Image (cartoon, rainbow, N blue to C red; front, side, top):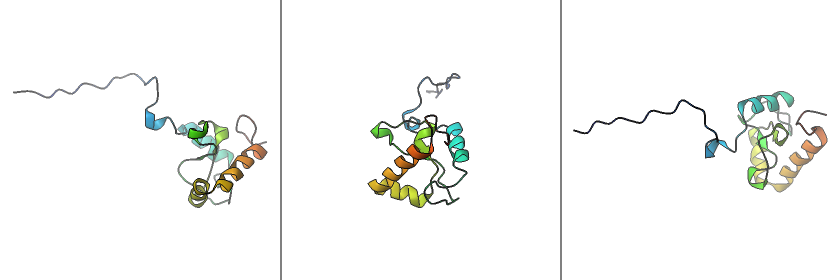
Length: 106
């Protein structure tokens, strides 16, 4: 009879992130963005935030996972940002007016 022996998982770290994880902010970056934005939505001031920051410039448009490219956002504003181009532009302007090149407040 054939005995099933699964291959053990390697103990080393991955050199490249899994495809699904490549477009995500790291836990450290998420914490830094949330603290920088005082744990509230940068558009409306709500404290009921999404679990992950919003990419101001989408990955598909050349955006990265840097602190400067993320903003704290509530669910309603996040929906509008993905639905309306004018709301996305508002976030781009907010980043330009409020953050330095490292993503810290001016």
